[in-house]
Length: 79
Image (cartoon, rainbow, N blue to C red; front, side, top):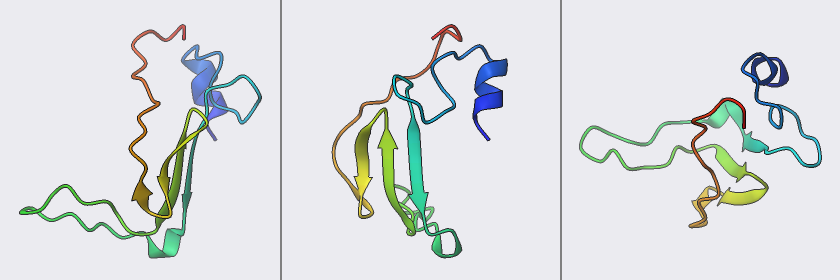
């Protein structure tokens, strides 16, 4: 699902779960994903997204933020 878009954009080390690649993984309970933010309290995490892994580091564990920020914005499509 992600390897073709990565390939088309020229992202040579992304889009697959392969050693040496930068991979982001979201583990969710799709039927129970629910937005919790409101207009008056917008900084809330959704329910049902139990784990998020960015570049091999756990950022969300058991629906709680770990404080890690291993990601980086891609500004050059040759990365």
